[in-house]
Length: 380
Image (cartoon, rainbow, N blue to C red; front, side, top):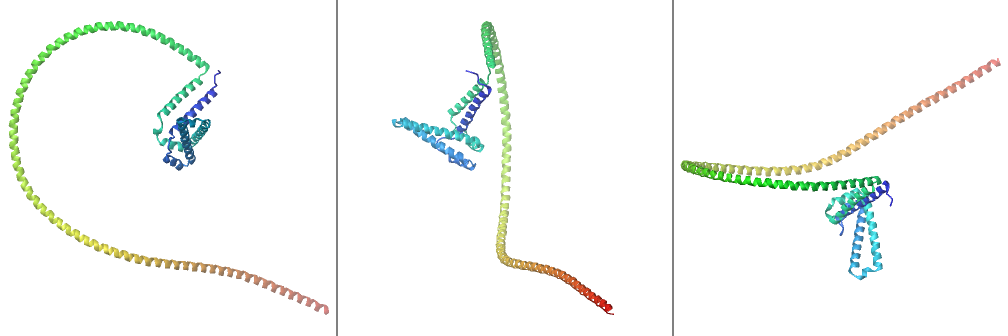
């Protein structure tokens, strides 16, 4: 078997990565009953073709599952026709799944909608399959991208590592023997330490007894101090009780005084409340009158507003008529100006024509008089 070229190995890896991407997308597609919320999201994003493809895929998947259950349930679903129909439906399902993958790759918005559904619907076995397939892709890429020289180098490296492992095992055995010797030495040291601990425990026992004697003396001294403190506490408690009795009497006196002040303040408060209620009642009466006056003013405002609207409409018509009149006068003035200008042109033209006609007549008369003069001279 010949070694694949780098281009061929890259194509194989690209095929595996494309399959991984498609399987990852399909893991987000829910199975079973169609989710109307998901389909509505596709329609809202303008990818209705993915909605139709998903519905077809769910229908084919449900039909194939029904056919497989019927084939497993009894002998009627195991005929040649049933198998052919099942295979044809499976081919259709494969085709529609490939179409769905292509449409999802072309529409990032649809992929985001699937991701937004969350990974809860993804099954654990399928995710494990994706992980194993990803590991297989990495292994295949490393295996296919390795050249013959690199493979030979790997074999040599493996051989060196095996030799190192063998030498490490020998070293481990030697270290194990050294460890046994160290353990024996440690046992001897532990025996010495046990003897030392026994001696220290005896010393500790002596120290404990001496401490107990000291504790007894301390307890006796503490008992005497407690009795003295108790006597002082009783005397101080008596003084404080006397102070409490004195303060109680003072409190009774102050309470009586405060009760009288409170009664006076309560009467004052009731008087202020009565005055406040009277002011509130007056305020309510004034507000009712103001509200009535406001309603009357609002009614008057409505009437005047109606009159204002009529007057505005009337004056708007007058303004329009005046504007139309001004425009007509402007047009008449312009027409008169043009008419006067045309008349001036005609007058100038008539004057020129008359002057030319008169000039012609005068020249004719002058010519006639010259001819008559010449005839008179000839006759003489």
